Length: 318
Image (tube, rainbow, N blue to C red; front, top):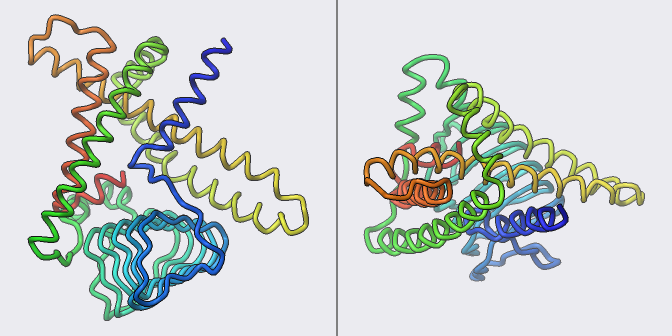
């Protein structure tokens, strides 16, 4: 029993190191990327002020959980907004996903990828060329026209061919690394928790719509709840009563990551069963099908994101 608990902690820690989760760096005290300055790391903001000045560049992913963030320069990776106030007056070279908080997109803002609004408030100026898919779950359920709009995605500004190829091969290498990591996780889960993996797969096969709906709503609601609790803890810390909120937030997000990994591996295992049949493999054990399907699923999702096809940002976000 003790060994299993340590293994669970190891799995959650490993999942936090996966490239898709983006290992986040704490930024320096002044919270400013000045003009002409380039920072080559991912940055997460928790209830503080952060500014990328005009001419400044962040060569990584920016996550905003709270505070006030202003982007007048360039973010070369994705921007995720979970809370706080974010103003974009510069360039986001990949995808923009809003889970919560307040986002102000000015007329000078540029976005090279997709914009997906899952929650929070978006202030989009009329003269801005950025188009966001708003509440994609509701749009998909309303009409076929809404489905078409969500799949086609917003208008994007594509970079030049040389830059696109460099970015594509970089994303491809990251996808391969992530696929190998997920394959190792799939092997570990199938070996240590075969019964749990089988039960989750059976639940998905019996009630696919219900399982998918619950999983999607959880993916949307839990980050928002965690971000709200984190912001409350930051405020209460000043009166020395908010520190208890931090471990709760950690447990919430660790549980979400663990559930996400389990769901991904389960879906991969179901795909792996079909692939094993098509390939006429001699061994169709749970471990083999889990690794085969999870690696294939991760590769396909990563390639869609690397190719930057219309609507790929929505698929990856969901």
